[in-house]
Length: 92
Figure 1 (cartoon, rainbow, N blue to C red):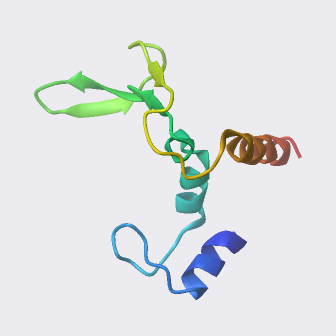
Figure 2: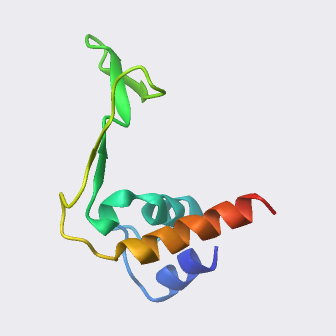
């Protein structure tokens, strides 16, 4: 992905302080609703409290959507445009 290469070329470090950026990391950032100031809660849930094993929530536990819970970095229109582009590319 060109974005990951550009970020790496610019010398920007990841949140973990690493120099290497992966396309999957950039994709997860672009799909994260927190960047527009909102949050989907309970994306995962604990299936075994002893082992603390967590799995993706596929409707087992109710999810909650919290609007205006964070200061937004991008506006909702830009976020929606990126999601539309992801959808367009997945249908090619």
